Structures are given as C-alpha cells and as structure tokens.
Length: 197
Image (cartoon, rainbow, N blue to C red):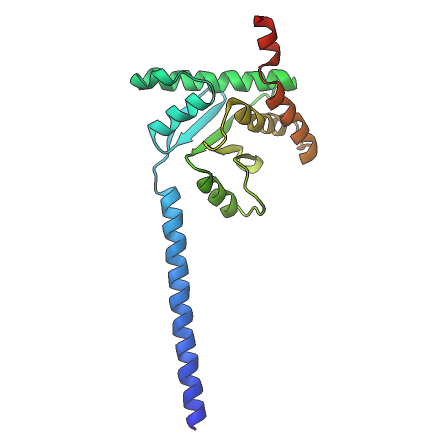
C-alpha cells in the first residue's frame, strides 16, 4: 500500500510539473510572438506592392538602403512617395531584365529591423536550415526582409522570385528561379550604367 501511495504522489507531482512546463513554454512563445507581432503594422501601397513596416523610421531606413534619398526624412510624405517610386522602379527593372510581365503583378513586402526577427518568422513558417536575410513566399505573394545586408540588389533578387512565380501558371523549379534571380541582382543596373558613361 505504501508503494502505491508513493507512486500516485509521484505521478501527481510529474503531472503538475508537466503542466507548469507547458504553461512556461506557452508564455515564452507568446512573449516572443508578441515582441515581433505586437507592433501594429503600417502600410504604404505602390503600383506593384504593398509595403508593411512597424514604424516610419523603418520605412525611411528601407528607402535609404534601396538607393533612396536619406535627406527626405524632413518631409515624410515626400519620403514615402519617393520610396514607393523607387520600389516600383526596381520592379519595372526586374521585369525588363527577365522579359516577364505578369498581368496582375502585385505582392507584399514585409520589412523587419533585424535578422533575428526574420529568422523567427522563417522558423514560424515551418522552414528549417539557415534563414536567409530575405525571402519570397509564393503562397503569400510576399517578400520578407531585414535590414541586415539589405540593398536594392537583394530586394530585386526577391522581386525576381515574385515576377517569375506570377508570370508562369506553374512555378518553375527552385534552381531555375534562383539562377534567374541571381542574374537580376548581378545585372540590376548594368545597361543603365553603361548608357550613362
């Protein structure tokens, strides 16, 4: 009888510890998700995309990293307009380089401040392996990127994935897409630069 009572107490203690562990794990997960998702996303629409960002300064920094004018910070409306024009200009350049013009080209861009945030989002989407600094998700028609390593070429590379996937009714193999996207980021401004010289 003593052994049965001791086993029942041990089982009850184990259940209590399991419940506490699950509660703590859930709280940690919710806090982490809240840290990334609690920000209320703002958005700006361009001709081809909707840009989502947590704060105005994040969008301004994004604009500067893709080649915009960093001095426009004084006039936010002018800055936002300029950033939208830059994004659309890069999109048109990508279409031209690929010679692909999807009829209903529309995608989202989600801007994160840090690589850690992108890594978290990447893992939450169920991907494994090293998280890239930016990626395109076909089923969401969305580009996800962080400031770490961001440039107009990185953005163009991900836009190439969007254009390719929206151009073909059946998406080409990932390896083919990657070759084309690398071509775009390598030659983004080549012809334009040569013409100016």
